[in-house]
Image (cartoon, rainbow, N blue to C red; front, side):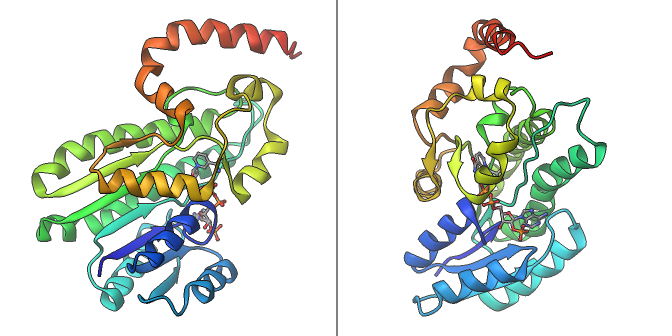
Length: 263
Ligand SMILES: NC(=O)c1ccc[n+]([C@@H]2O[C@H](COP(=O)([O-])OP(=O)(O)OC[C@H]3O[C@@H](n4cnc5c(N)ncnc54)[C@H](OP(=O)(O)O)[C@@H]3O)[C@@H](O)[C@H]2O)c1
């Protein structure tokens, strides 16, 4: 029985991954900050064949994550698959966003992921076995108006994942990163009212997916040993051809943003 640790597993994409892992018989450990949703998910998954453990910790706090993961590994065994889904987004134009909001997104999305990887990586390397699935974002593949902090955090994750993959592979550890499009979760519901019209002009309405469809694509990608996992056609095109298309896309975005007539 595999032990899967999922950060941000109490909601949205992480919870959908937790449900799928529990359904296939994995021992599931879920980490997040707020006890209520953690215990609700634990109660929902109770009675499945494998145990479900929860731990309260902030991924931005390296010591708390190290302690929580150590306790979870004592309970359910060494981590076979780490899923880092904990993440936050706060849209805002760069010059209007308080520095604390900018930093919170980098701290949670980038350093939070790094802290969690660090907590399992030495053990995986020693066992020459383990998989790490980072939940990135399409916002890590292309800049989006009003999302400078979020894009920086998710683009940073791409560099981290690409470099770590090269180091981890010879040690028997597989690294993947998934790039979800807009996904129907509490995070998206809270974000949409704050999304600038200029951002919506770039993102468009297409490609939105359910959390379960993203979870299915992410887990299938890990099973196939994929590094980059693109749920849906829009993300696949962006991932495979985005860097070639950017010289064309950037002026097109400029025109769409100008058409919104801001200021
Ligand atoms: N929804 C989308 O449209 C979309 C698109 C692309 C990528 N993503 C990415 O997918 C991931 C999951 O997003 P989601 O939409 O599923 O969000 P969600 O429904 O808001 O769930 C976020 C989860 O992360 C946890 N979390 C947040 N900050 C944390 C912290 N500092 N420490 C520990 N846990 C923390 C939350 O629990 P607590 O608040 O209780 O800690 C919750 O369990 C994120 O990395 C997000 O950036 C989402």
